[in-house]
Image (cartoon, rainbow, N blue to C red; front, side):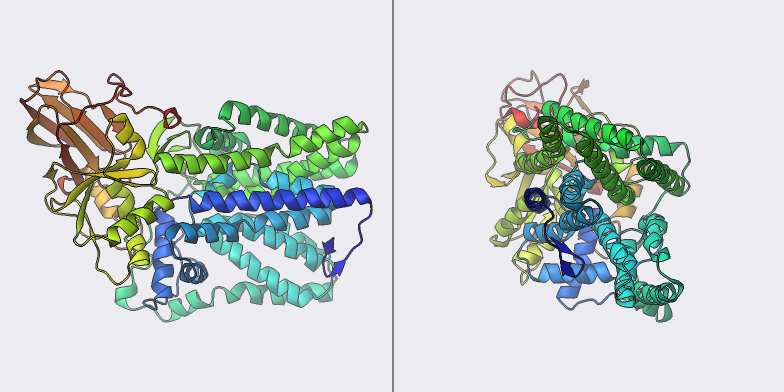
Length: 639
């Protein structure tokens, strides 16, 4: 096994099998991580990062500052330039996300190496399996923003800290460690909370080596900040001033939120992601008991380790450190997104691996030992199942989410809710179809918000020479885009299908007759001002006459619109939508005579008129799968 710079012989023949199992587990974890990432979706943050990566790759921009942190510009542009390289060698949004996922998945071989250094062959196996445990880390599949690399960067820092502590090539390795610490800081500044842990090996050096290591480490750390230092000295041109138009970030948390945060980190998010992404092969009611058994064995191992002074010191210090980390995070902000908690993952993984190694080492019976080893693999099995589940959700076009609203880890568990999912594969397929069109396409309904979020990057990837072919809203060549699952619930076969989404030509467009202005990736968040002004807008009413058997599809064309809702009346009577999901409501006159007319009155709350799409589909029969009473779609796994 490779340890440091020398090749060490296997101590026993059993080590060969443990190393083989650890290597297989790492490869399996990497493969499913990459597959899931390629089926993720662009988000506000990942679209911003990709926009600037694409600008760099085309030579249209050379930014000196990086992604904003909350409301301030703190980071250098290293992430943008790394992504520019990734974008240059990939041919689609999906392959780009997959390659970014591969970079993040380096954490698994790093965890294997570190587990080997601390616990030998068995330690390597248990650490890889623990690293694959679902929960916070599962969010890394969904988005490819800079924060998703925080855990991987921390594993790299830990590995380099171990090498520095050995006292060989101290200056060189310390410079690499300082550079890695800067990478982690650029992934997210909350990784700085682990700096005391990373400094412990440095304290083992003698005074001479310690000073040299400190100078080299500071130099390596500063290197990544040179571009932003230049930007401070020489401000960018006015037209580049919006590169990081910082968004709004809640400041000022409370210590009381630390307990909710701890519960979410230890179990709450594990349960949430399993309920959200479990596959047909391993449904959540099977996966959750498997993980409970795994955590029970880990807990038993940690309790057993308390019998020895070394084990007691390690477990108590690690537990105390984890509590301090939760308190620090809770105090930073009143809204704590999942990526701020990534700093807790390496310590939790090492703690779990330590517990598994202890309980396995204390047991003498071979059958029980084998059972513990099998239980240690359960997180990896669930990890694989969730990756398949995410791909299933992408093909369906939506999911039933148990994830926290607005990703706030400082809030208790959320109730199940329906959310749409326009993943990268669907976006690529739509962009290819779009590139084949001779004229501009006016897009309506739920799909508009997702495409708007991508800031036109998909079309620029597949047909960069053509001018934009999409109009968000408008009445020329109008199409309604909905998840395939919704079309099935409506008993309609879409005219064109793109992965989990499909489009059908609109019979008529009521609003808006004029398309929204093109979105730009130069502002972050995109259309933030529109979202805020829409949420504050006074309610407004429109009157519409349709054929009695028509469908009215009403959607907010901005993805984030929590206050958006529709009140409908027909013939003076209140009318409920036959379907409501995400920011879309679909109406049909129930009980109206065929061949007649329906007079609708729609009152819109939480949105400005120019951002509300109202389109009509004529002579449509609804399906028996609709629940007219609840107005909710059938579950994604029902068809």
